[in-house]
Length: 112
Length: 113
Image 1: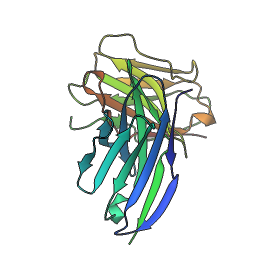
Image 2: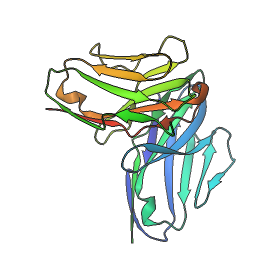
Image 3: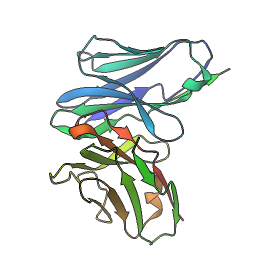
Image 4: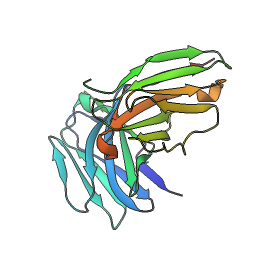
């Protein structure tokens, strides 16, 4: 059965810390992996990763995919209270782009 | 519109009643998706519409759930004879030509009492 597992499930840090969120997957016909940030309501898109070893970066956030070991990490440096959210990882399979398989999410709390 | 719009934002209903949830996708997006997020759970796929193709209904949990998309734009998710376990946030998303990334709406929080 296809599955996506995120760790840790929750994390509390202080402003300025660096955090690493993990997403591992076991899916057939892997196509790409997506990261989303969910604050109160709509998940907002962060990154889509298709190729191994190519880092994607946006400001203090970066992410990379390892297709050999079947995982991705999301790094946040110099965390701010506004980074507090649930971070969701999802996998897309080839030929089935409508049905994203989501992990259970990592809840990040950044304390001042 | 600027983003995916869902209504209502909150819905409280009594067990056994029918409810309709509406989604208006981003203009020009041909693909529309419904997901469900229960408390403490990840997002669960429900149904996917892409253009004029037959929808992928494989995620609908029971025959009480149905969805339609009129004119290739607005979609309505209908839940008949609601049960307490239907309580969740129902999220709609759209994408360009069925390719990720998906862009999500703010969701409808459904509470069945």
